Image 1 (cartoon, one colour):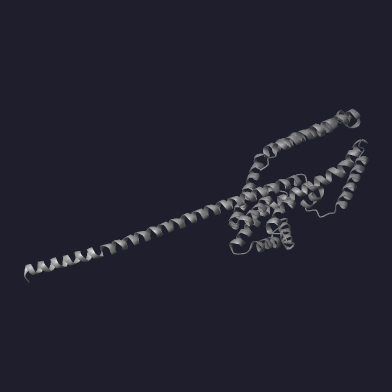
Image 2: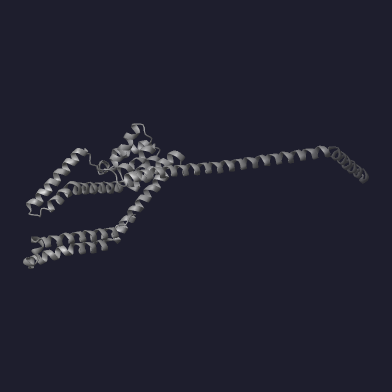
Amino acid sequence: MDLSLLGFVLLAAVSAAAVAYALMFNTISAERKAEQRLESVKRVETDRNVIRATRERASEAARRRRTIQESLSELEARQKDRDRYLTRPPLKIQLHQAGIEMPMRRFYMLSTAGGIFLAFLALIAGAPLWVVPGALLAGIFGIPRWIVAYLRKRRVKAFLDEFPNALDVIVRAVKSGLPLNDAVRMIAAEAREPVKSEFRRLVEAQQLGLSMAEAAMRMSETIPCPEANFFGIVIQIQSQSGGNLSEALGNLSRVLRDRKKMKAKVQALSMEAKASAAIIGALPVVVAVLVYITSPGYIMPLFTTSAGHLVLGVSAVWMCIGIFVMRQMMNFEV
């Protein structure tokens, strides 16, 4: 083929392409601008959606924080009212907390009978006449209430020993898919006392129409300890603001076990001081017994004369004050 013909063909093709481009330039430019505008609109819409989602998440987090703060404030106010009522509860509530199901009339009758019996023993033992009214008052008002306080403390201790295990069972039940009510019924049927009876009260309260949160908040009225109050607060917050119940109860169980370990550690560290206090408290009695064995005539005036009775009374009062002070120094609240 002739080169001039080939050059002419190429020149014609280039000219045709240039003419076509010149004719379609506006159309291509308009399409490009439309695509750019569409992309910018999409980008702006995406940014708006991201900003809207961020604002919604922030508002949801703020609303949840506000709900939790309001719940905590309400729970704190209720707890203050409950603490004012439960710090020194009436005797009827103390009997209930000690697990003693007894009418108040019977308790007063037994206390009076115990006081009369103790006064009769003091009179038979040859104690001075001024000791008999003291023995009567101690038998009516002192010893029965001391027994109630002891049983109350023992019941709370038994509850704290079993309560973390019950929480672990509830956590496993909730993680396996069971509702919280079914897990509580399982504890009420299979746990050891007094956890069994306390969770049975939760089930009975629900049957009467109370919610789980309200029934759990009432547990601290029958078990006067912070651990029962913690359980009620966790259930109350979870019912109002939502969240992972199994994780919250698992954390509570771990906290309770850590508190128990800390109490055991404090008790172990204070055993030396307790042993020293026991030796100091028993020393006067031991010395008096040894003196009576070796020289009875030397110590008998303390028991046969009025001046000796006065010395024994004053010494007993000072010993009680010293024992009370040592006890307060050795008891640590964890």
